[in-house]
Image 1 (tube, rainbow, N blue to C red):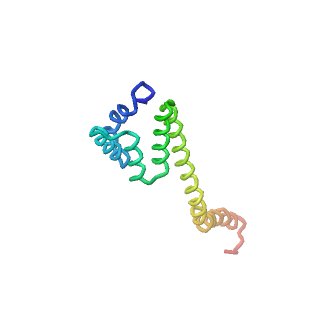
Image 2 (spheres, one colour; image 1 turned 60 degrees about the horizontal axis):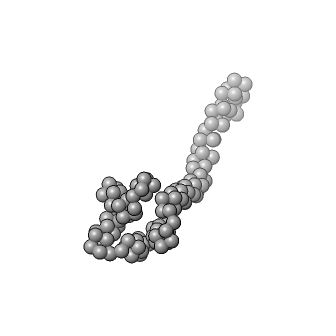
Image 3 (cartoon, one colour; image 1 turned 90 degrees about the vertical axis):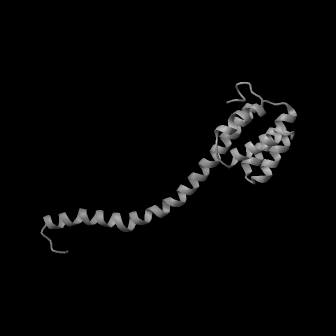
Length: 133
């Protein structure tokens, strides 16, 4: 949001980093301190990607450095990456849910379904006065 409102990347990170928490936020704060001491933004982003070996962090660093070199709009690029990251998390959750679906069927088939069938059959047998049970 800060980039789309007109801030440059450094001021956007400086505005957002103190307000968030987590591992990536701590790395951004560390990168801000290093940039305040004279380091370059691109160098610090690549160092952050090296310290946090996650694919999304590496992709973020590469896209930002490429955008800075070419002068392309950064806000749209980061919005697209956010959509990509959310889709990746969504796919991972769907995969886990698919694995758990089979596990959830076991109690249904072996416990709940037989009891339901028994509750359906027993009153009928009592009504017919048959002594099978």
